[in-house]
Length: 389
Ligand SMILES: Nc1ncnc2c1ncn2[C@@H]1O[C@H](COP(=O)(O)OP(=O)(O)OP(=O)(O)O)[C@@H](O)[C@H]1O
Ligand code: SF4
Ligand SMILES: [Mg+2]
Image (cartoon, rainbow, N blue to C red; front, side, top):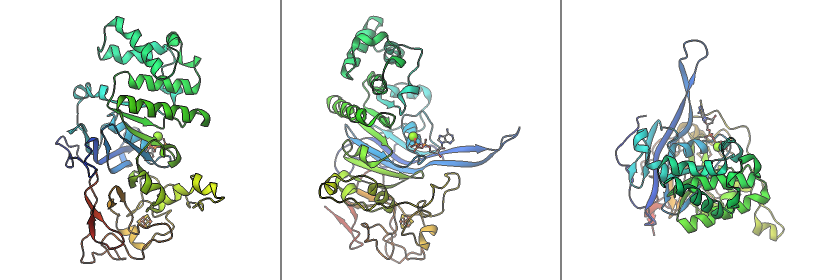
């Protein structure tokens, strides 16, 4: 569980040829749990993020989706280096920033910014909008004193707010307007990567679409890469060409939009998707059959052995408690971590991960976890052979 400072192992263009701006490998965040009393001993760890790997292409966007408590915000806070990871690497433009000191991080604060979930608490109520948005310009000495206000007004205009309201306080704005202020603040330093942590979940449904459209316009105009964190798959659908699904600190499936929404292979993704209204099916009077997950999400202090989803998985078998399934690439831009990965209702009877139902090696190749990006070859689930484009 050491933090490395060497270059990330997989710092190379992914299968698409698009160079990643962010390449996260085997990222880990274990929060210590202390005993009560005077001598507070560490008695366990919250395994909030445990071995997460993914990539965000330059100027592109990756959606990160999962239930409450699965580790989405922690992942975002690790990437922005508000937290120092327990282990793993965070490759940003080819350099591993996981072990960077506060001094080394200073210039990076300009390049990686975060939009927070709750605009009401993330803006200082005692500061005017001008002070909030202008502060990064002053801290990073981007402009002289005279340049701050014109730039703040320009940013307010960019996010669709009245530049004349620069002297107002956050409480004088609506929820949607406050989130626009948060977005303007994140844009102040012209970042290359924005971590948007549930940027619309605190807003009314009618306002959500406006804010998402704004983010989409900004992405196109300024070529900003996004890690877009959300609770449900409906929100990221139109924003993100690629989506990663997280469960209890791990990524269980990551795929391009088309593959994920039309051919999800992990039982958890299938359950999440069954809760998303399908416009095309609704048009012909139908709806996906709702899969209701049993039980609660287990504690990340003592997660289940083997596959962490097994306590709620409708198709779990004994082997799932013994061996953790690797996140394996099964299509040009599709990865899944399940011994019985398959389309809904067509899950195979024997593991696809190169082990038998008892968890012993079958003599063939045991499938290993893929790196953060996509390779040019992958495991063909129908033949069990490696194949390529
Ligand atoms: N600073 C901390 N100290 C200890 N445990 C923490 C800390 N921050 C988060 N956790 C725990 O880590 C796990 C993941 O939390 P996280 O906030 O990343 O989840 P999330 O996916 O963002 O959830 P939500 O959708 O509710 O925002 C949770 O069990 C949480 O209680
Ligand atoms: S590995 Fe087993 S428990 Fe985990 S998702 Fe697949 S079938 Fe379910
Ligand atoms: Mg969160």
